[in-house]
Amino acid sequence: MLLMSSLAVLALHTTAQDRFANVEIQAEEVAPGIHVLYGRGGNIGLAYGPDGVFVIDDQYAPLTAKITAKIEEITGGQADFVLNTHFHGDHTGGNERFGEQGALIIAHDNVRRRVIDDNEAPGDAPVITFSDTQTFHINGETVKAIHLEKAHTDGDSIVHFVRANVIHGGDLLFEKALGSFPFIDLNGGGSVEGVIEAVEVIITLSDDETRIIPGHGLLMDKAGLIEYHAMLVDVRDRVQTMIDAGETKEAIVEARPAKAYVKGRERGFIREDRFVETVYDSLMAE
Image (cartoon, rainbow, N blue to C red; front, top):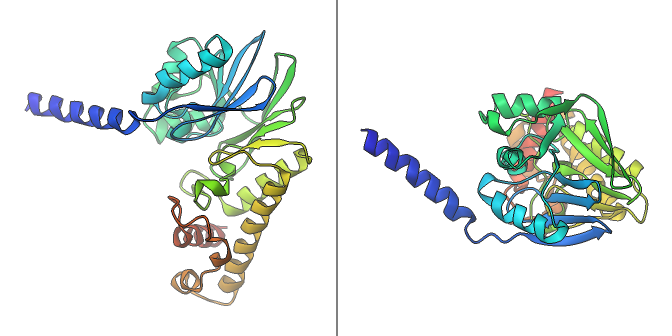
């Protein structure tokens, strides 16, 4: 029995490793001293300078070696700080290994709670948490982490590089090239109204020169952000109108209130029906 259990664990470990075997970490410069790293999972923000290396999110544990190699290639060093935008494993899965390398892991209070309670991964829990905002003065930059309530989850933070005019939006933002409608984690404390309000905050912090790193997809600008917000509002309003008219959930999904936004999102892990169902469930809960 012990042998069989050991073989089962080994098989699971091998499968997880194989899943990431062909993943390559790609880098794109966002601004001087700031890059976005693409791999498998949430987009990683990377900022560096004489004071240290500041990382936003860290994808999955099996990718940590590849991620740290890319960080060293770009910066000549390793992460000193890792800030999680929320608790999902594709953004926090490397926390324990980055911590073992000496990085301080930072996030909102709810991220620590969710990582420990929901993910059952105490080793990935942030060691420094905040309740509202946290400001870092590093590499000549003012970096502000701002908590936005009940949005994608209940622990979301955006990260604003004030001087560089760069914002990491975490999973509040699913850029269209990803091919997916946005994921709103209702079980994780999220809501469609919260996501809309959070995107409005990002819009107010942006101008025509702002470069925006989404949680998934390619870099965005303010025009893309406004278009994304308009989609969320339109679908929300259409679903709410049908709810007010007494339509059932099944009838609303069948009516396809998000139909106008399907093109380019047909292959994503959040498809049209699931997104509409989430909007319905969120509005009914509120």
